[in-house]
Image (cartoon, rainbow, N blue to C red):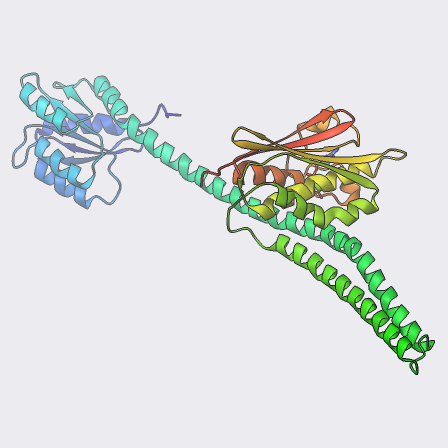
Amino acid sequence: MIDKDLLKNMTILYAEDEDSIQNGITETLSLFGIHVICAKNGQEGLSLFKAAKTKIDLILTDIKMPKMDGLLMVQKIREVDEFIPVVITTAHQETNLLMKAIDLGISSYVLKPIDIYKLKETLHKAIEPKILKEQLLEQNKKLNIEVQKNKENQKIMVTQSRFAAMGEMINMIAHQWRQPLASIGTAAFTLKYKILSDAFNLDLKEQRNEQSVFFKNKLDEIEFYVQNLTTTIEDFRNFYKSDKKVLNKTIDSAIHNCLKIMKKDLQASNIEVQLDLKSKNKLNIYENEIIHVFLNILKNAQEKLLEKENHKLILEICTKDIKNTVQIDIYDNGGYLDENIKDKIFEPYFSTKKEKNGTGIGLYMSKIIIENHHQGKLFVKNIREGVCFSIILPKKIHL
Ligand SMILES: Nc1ncnc2c1ncn2[C@@H]1O[C@H](COP(=O)(O)OP(=O)(O)OP(=O)(O)O)[C@@H](O)[C@H]1O
Ligand SMILES: [Mg+2]
């Protein structure tokens, strides 16, 4: 917004060789709160401009002056400050000079004898664009600081959300490991039992062979389960590697990798996962980020489904190509999302699970990953017996 009292506290360099005019105008300008630096000719004006300690906001100058005329002074000042507004004072007969002044990009002129109100209006108009530009620059600077702050906040949230996911991961690893660990335990116990109970008569060749086959099978079993444990750890480790590279692949591997991590946990919750993967388009994706989104959505669905009793718990993941995009729908039959909170669930820190330590950043982060990092869309709808989160990803990310 432009201040009506814009001229107040401005500093003007005023070049005029006639004392009586200069004194009169200077006195009146001072009454408006303007600081005036006076010069008697162009040369003095130029030196004063170059030596000025405070910033000069505008030049007001006569044209015809001894030593150096006003236009030459303006030309030389423009070499130092390309955009400073200039108002000239002129008489009717100086039309030629006026044309030259226009070439020099003079902001405006006032005719002599000077009408002080006209002069004030002209100065006001001349300075207005400069002030607007300065205000715009100032606002831009503030905006940039805000944008920067926002980026930093987002970084903190990414870390928070990864920590939250890590807690859940530990739970999932525990589920994933329970079965192979139990099997290794059983195999080791069986081996020990066979030895301690002298189950094989080692004096007989046939029994010795039987024992070695038995031992080999059990050791193979143990090796298989150890491999299984290692793969689980690799899957989780991969998820925690940060994505630096955009890949170009179908969405299937992100879905399968996510399910590898969650499968046992979902099974333990009696949730049936139904897949209908029709998409064939290859996509630009940061795979771990996309897996993170799937984990957030699936985890939410699981938490909702676990509140249901006497109910067949279903999670559906469907993909399809729509022209140059891929749509992924993740549906759970855990009941509708309350209409009152539907618009809020993507806001940071919105959670209806505060008593269960829900942080409320899962969906917020997911939206950022899909919409900012992948130029896609993430939205939610109540359909059939529950909620469907839809993700639309373009084939190409414009970097
Ligand atoms: N499938 C769903 N069915 C019903 N409500 C859901 C579903 N998914 C999300 N919500 C609602 O959206 C809210 C926000 O989800 P979000 O994942 O952002 O946070 P949270 O699950 O509460 O906590 P966290 O950040 O730890 O995941 C949830 O608290 C829940 O009320
Ligand atoms: Mg969540």
